[in-house]
Length: 110
Image (cartoon, rainbow, N blue to C red):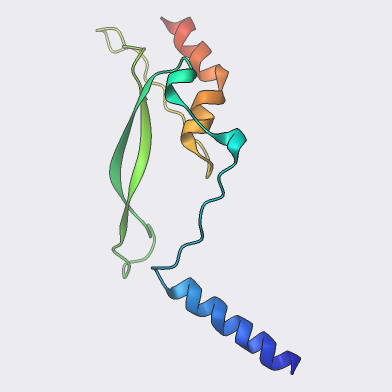
C-alpha cells in the first residue's frame, strides 16, 4: 500500500511539473512590497526577450526579462560611468528600493 501511494504521488508530481498551465502562486509577503514612489529612488521598469533555456537547442521558449533604469543619474558627455547591478532570484524592485549603497554611489559620482 505505501508503495502505491508513493507511486501515485510521483505521478502527480510529474504531471504537474510538465503542465505549463499549472503554476504555483508566488508567495507575496506584505513586508516585501515594493513601491517606487515611496523609495526616493525613481526608476523605469523595462523588459527584453530572454531565452528560457540558454544551454539547450530544443527549447526556444522566451520570457520577458525585467530590468530597471534609474532616471536620476545622467552620465557626463565625456562618457561617464555606467552602473550595472545584478540581483538574485528575488524581487528586483524590492532590492532596488532597499539597497542604499547603489543610491549612495550615484550621489557620490555626481
